[in-house]
Image (cartoon, rainbow over all chains, first blue to last red; front, side, top):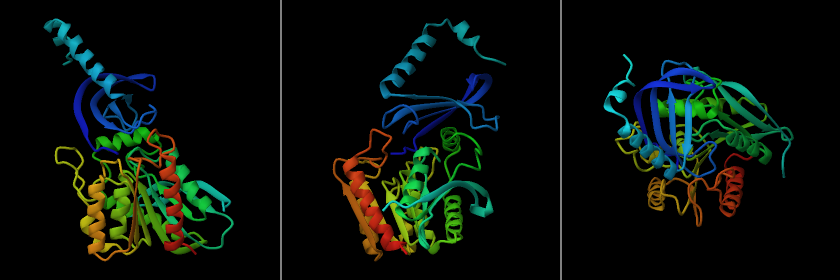
Length: 92
Length: 247
């Protein structure tokens, strides 16, 4: 199905979109029909700048197992970093 | 018979007269024929949807698909546009109906138009096709596995789409529903509710639920494709269009 389930969160960071870096401020996570990955459904991640008039984004389509592994890897990596360094990732 | 056809991108007037990009195909070897409004699925105004437009022209009908995401993302790739519109909460129902009305006008303005127009939509477009049929004078309404026709989207989602079956009294054309027995959105229980409601309203309809098929069984470019169900369903569509919008 075309699921309507979508998680949208504000983010702070930069993304490389069409070969050029730009600041990003929004991420959407959803499970729906992929455009390129040859599966019926996949976990989709879009990261973009809401200030950009363009619809361009950093996009990922992952199978469910990979998506969960990626999420766990992100959490494991953050957990291993000293708190002072995590704080150093915040801007402003 | 496979008809000769021409296909091209046009600009049409959508809801409130907004200019919209649209893909139009029509046969070149008929003097008069009906039109089909093709409503693209949530992934957008993509190549597979344009292929459907050409297919209807090859069947002998004029067909048009408007880019429902053109306002938000003119010139963007279909997937980027779809992602942006999803993040913004989707296409409002009122705007969708206005866009379908504009597409009907564009089809009826063709020199070969016979004045009869049907709509067809897949997935999210199935719900939108049904909704358009409840509010517009469509001669035929085809719903291919549209979810949330008889139930609302759950409240915690950023989308807020309500069931449209409550508007069934407004249907003026015949309804064709094509579903997969293994689908959960819509489930066979949900399509049974739809059928009950159409019966109660005294509406003319035809519904088929295909075994060994789930959501997206028409999509030849996806693993959900089920050739046996899709082939039979295309034959049903062909007969339905001949009956509802044929010359």
